[in-house]
Length: 238
Ligand code: SF4
Image (cartoon, rainbow, N blue to C red; front, side, top):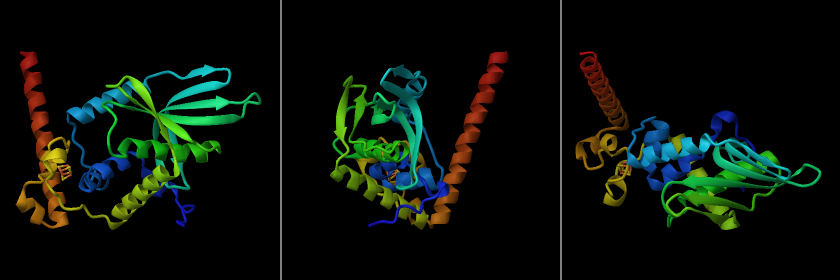
């Protein structure tokens, strides 16, 4: 049994890290340990979708309330994040009777547990915050235009907490795993240009060397973008 009662605010793991670590442990380390981030079509679409969801208003009826963009955390499980939507049912005395998270996703249902584990992590946070058992959640896939029920059962909870532990180990180790090029993943990864999974030279560099190399590349790209913006501004003035 893991002693999870010890987590402080500083030790909380972002729920978003679950999807990154399941996709690729190196991607997790680049984003969360090295603070590297690069937009691509998939991430940009996801950001727009979540901004749209966050802009929604709160809806409330007598025994039911919807909260969009709710910040959640669990000190017991060491997790923190934000729910796209939380639906809350009350009994006649005004006490919370049932709570259910809803996650909005841009694509279709995935074969792996990535979306379900993220939803389960939200459920674990809501259980601590509201003092109720969260038995189910829902995922709305925009390409399918419908919500799918997800049971937050024992098996999914084990998967989610195991992933959380894995993230904690990677974070505590503080080093970025080596790249391993896989066409299926790397070709759609937003970090492929900075990660350079096909580059043997970069792979053989030490951890600090890789970090410095990526830092320099990021600075050069930022400088190029700035230069392009200046040139565009000059063009407009003329
Ligand atoms: S490019 Fe490939 S190896 Fe590199 S972070 Fe992305 S998925 Fe992982």
